Length: 347
Picture 1: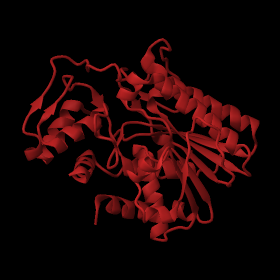
Picture 2: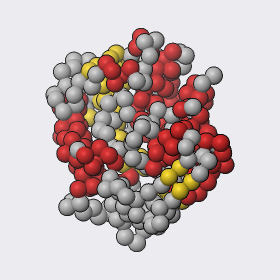
Picture 3: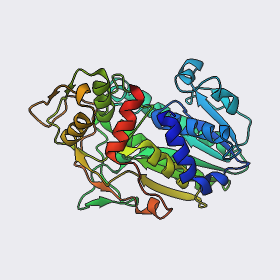
Picture 4: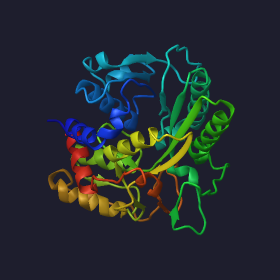
C-alpha cells in the first residue's frame, strides 16, 4: 500500500461522519494542481473510488499537462475535468454546493519573479469565482488563505482569528498576504450582497507532505526534502535558527473538510500544528537521524538572514487552533512521522 493510500484510508476513517454529509452534493475545486489542493483532490477521488460517499466532483486546471502530473487516467473517470484560466470569467453552467478556491502559486521564487501575477491570480480568480457563484442556488466558497495575513501582531503570544496585524504595503513581498487580505474582504462583501453565498476562510500555516513541489521551490521544507532526496547533503542559506511549526498535509485536509461543512454563513479558521515548533536546525537534525545515508553532510550560513527576497520575515507568533479544535480536530501526525512519509514518497 502506498503512502497516499495509507493516508487516505486513515482520513476516511477519521472523517467518516463528515464524509457522509457529502452524499448527493457537488464540489468544484478551483486550482486542483497545487500541493494541498491536489492531495485534497486525490483524497476526494479515493472517497468516490472506495464508495465511502457519493458526490459530484469537478477539478479545474490550466492544461491537460498540469492535470497529468497529479491525476491518473483511472482517476479521471471519477471527476469532471475543467480547463480554465481563473483570470478569465468562468464559462460554467453546473450547480455546485461547494467551491474550493485554491488557485495561486505561493512559492517564494514566483513571488520574486512575478509578484503581479500573484495579485492578479488571487484577486481576479476569486472575483470570477464569486461572479459564477452568485448565480448558483446556494453555494459555500472555501478560500485558501494564509497565516501571513496577520503580519506583525503586537503584544500577542498567540494569534487568534480575530486579531489584526500590520503589513507594509510598500514591501513587494507583501503582495501575497495583502492580496489574500483583499480576497477575504471580497468574500465578506459578497456574502453581505448575495444571500445564497456563504464562506469558510482557511488560514493555512506551513503545510507539507506528499505532492508538494520540491524542484527549486524556495520554501524551506520543500528545499529540505529536495536536498534529502538528492542525497548530496543539506546546505542552507541561513544559520537554521528560525523557528517554524509544520503541519502534515493529512491533518490540514482534515481541518479543511471539517471547516467546509460547518453550518454557518461566515467562518474563519487557522490551520496549523503548533504542538512541535522547532528551529530549522532541529528539523535538519531530525531528518539526518531518520535518513542518515541521505544526509551525509549539513552546512549552514553564518547568519540568520536567508539569502532570498522571497521569504516572509516576521517574528514567529503561535497560531491559535482552538476554533478548529472545537470541531473535534487535532493534529495526529508527528513531525517525525510526517517527515518519514513525505521523504519516502519521493524516493
